[in-house]
Length: 67
Image 1 (tube, one colour):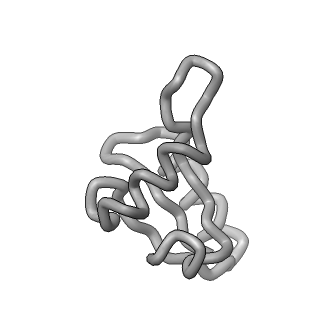
Image 2: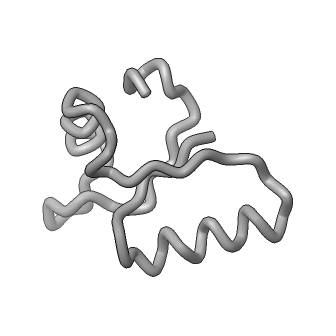
């Protein structure tokens, strides 16, 4: 599992804390560090109704996003 988040994202920090407490393995990546193609695909697939990206983004299939 890969978590994509942003700096100072409270929901991202809460998810990481929850996964750590459960002992769930995950990798974390800052959205800005992701390759441009992956950023574009994430931007298209994880939008809220008002057009923002709904962080944190949980990616199960890294290959689909070239991560």
